[in-house]
Amino acid sequence: MLEEELEMEDKFSLEAKLYDKIWGKYNYDSDVEFLNEMFRKHCCKKIIDLGCGTGNHAIRLSKLGYEVTGVDISPTMLKVVKEKDKKARVKFIQGDMKNIEKVILKKFDAAICLGQAFSSLVTNKEKQIFFKELNKVLKRNGLFIFNARNAKKINEDYLNTIRLGHMLSEKKLQLLILECNTRHPKNRNVIVWRTHIFD
Image (cartoon, rainbow, N blue to C red):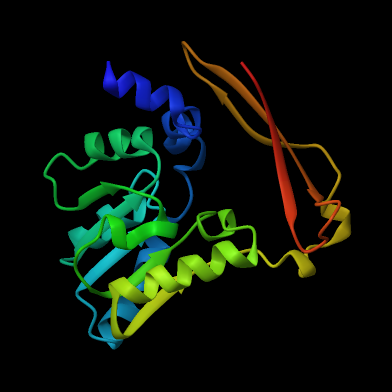
């Protein structure tokens, strides 16, 4: 019952169930090749994956011998990832990356925050809180690797247009995701991403 209640409160529950079907074709191996090169260069062994989602980076890194901890706010994402990581190589923890110290008690050589995770920090205040928390769990001279879209550099032609994001057709599931990005009316440096799902 508690698990069902958590899923009901989890705003990422639908995304978690479809995540690997939709974004599973992304080239995670290329990312991990780059990460491995950086971690070896900077002698990093203990890695924290913030906003780990369904663990596609974390699991691959653990197979290369890194000690990985994945943190995600979504209990449904973590339910999916634990099914994928049956040998429990990665330690997965539910928590908000803006409040990492509350759930993490040790220090790491490096942190990663990939995909759309960092972009979920919309305001400067949220980013400041995040970096303050990150500083508490990274060792001195620790490495932080993240990616984020730069709203200022997004081509205006890309905005305010409805596009087909993804299409899935399986026996029990037909899904169409339409996407539209626009600038926030009060802050042009914030991009609002809207989706509509048809099933």
